Amino acid sequence: MANVSEDIREKFPLHSAVWENDFRKLEEELRSLQNEIETMDPRGRTPLHLAVSLGHLETVRVLLRHGAQVTKENAHNWTVLQEAVSTGDPEMVQLVLQRRDYLKASTALGGVPELLLKIRESPDFYMEMKWEFTSWIPLLSRICPSDVCRIWKSGACLRVDTTLLGFENMTWIRGRRSYIFRGDGSCAELMEMNHDDGVVDVERFNISQEVEDVTLESMQPAEQEVAKRLTTPIVNTYLDTKNIAFERSKSGIWGWKTDKTEVVNGFESKVFNVNNVNVVIRTRTEHLTDEEKTRIKSERNVLESLLGTVEQHISAQGDLTLEYATATNPTAITPEEYFDPDFDLGDRDIGRPIELTIRTQNNFPCKLWDLSKKT
Image (cartoon, rainbow, N blue to C red; front, side, top):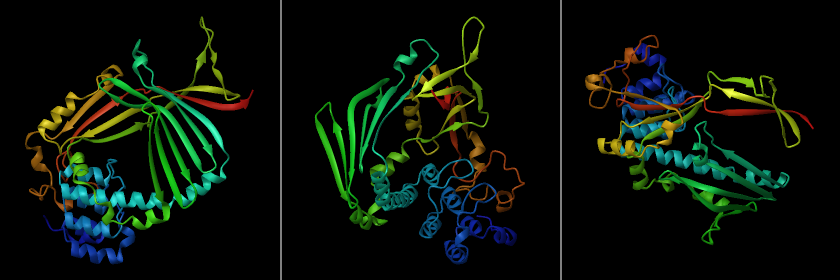
């Protein structure tokens, strides 16, 4: 790997040590620059993101020991774990996954006592949430999913009832399930009731004991979990709202149109249509074998084409692979090029060449209700 100049080293001390895979130097820098561990370089990567993309395993270990965030996203909205999976390295995935699961477990359990207190102090209630997907295509709405979720709250206990369980072979899987949570401060109980089969699964745990039992070593991921991540696509789904627009819904016939209003829970509500909201699904497959990629394509949901999904493919072709900095070809991009914010890398980047599919459902239908006054 090309040496980093003193000018770059001064501006980006942690990233420079990562680039050169000098984890001993990185340890020294972190003792005095701990607060800069989440600083981004000109390409939108933290030191941890850069280390993972370059495949520097020991450097990754050092950064994780010093508390580098594994859930942070880079400039392209990929998490550290997603970038680790893209390397195809099982040890890298295991290392990042272990740290992420440890932080999730310790954070979640640490907040349980306060959460139980807030639940107990809040008023008891019952509510229903209805959601459904529709389509302008005739009869398609009949096979789109919908459900009514019912929630009860009493003291520190919660119950949730639902009927939509999943989707398989073009069929929505239905069933009657209840999830009941009970907490009394030091202990908690979670019950899953299968009303169709008459089966109840109960999980009990002592909160204080669970917090003590959560250690980094106890969060060692199973080999099957690591293998599953390495044989499935990396998926990132988000709503694109940069061109969002709102307009009043109209009602009436024969050319006479007025602003539409509806009554929601006793409130007279203005109705707005939300336009230019797109659902974007990004899928990366560079870590998969050709056989796995073929299988994934055959399993694609045919409903996507009916719902107006637009697909775009971005992948490395031919000799483009040689333009990337990887473990076998680390000098394709020089430090001067990478750390210069004004230098245009074009299609080049560090790490494994990306294979990306972007699927966009344009103009995802949305509505908003403005609760203006009570009727």
